Image (cartoon, rainbow, N blue to C red; front, side, top):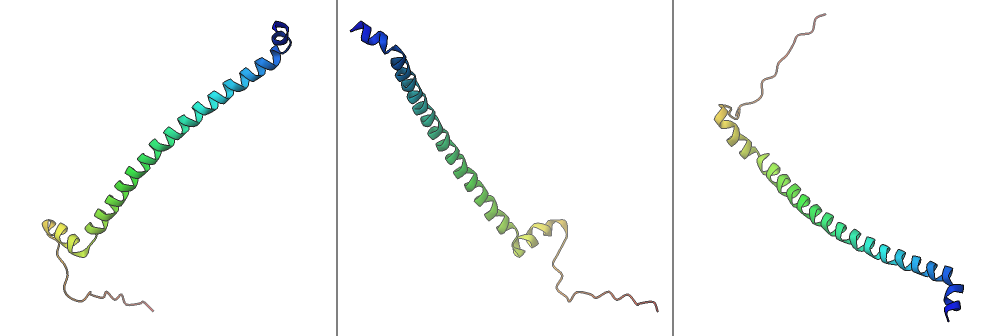
Length: 91
């Protein structure tokens, strides 16, 4: 029996190395899965923030909101027709 083990010592070392690689690969895969889950959660939070900011930006861009926000600065809506500036051509 001891000679059987000693004769196949290289093969047993190879199997042990494969076992170590298998265990290391399983740990690495679990690490990647956890990292992916964390990144997916961050993506969800960033998407929520983006949608929130986009909605707020669209709301603040409404004509009524712009008029209300610039009223404090003394600006107001012009109700008349726009004035046309004509520059006579030199001939």
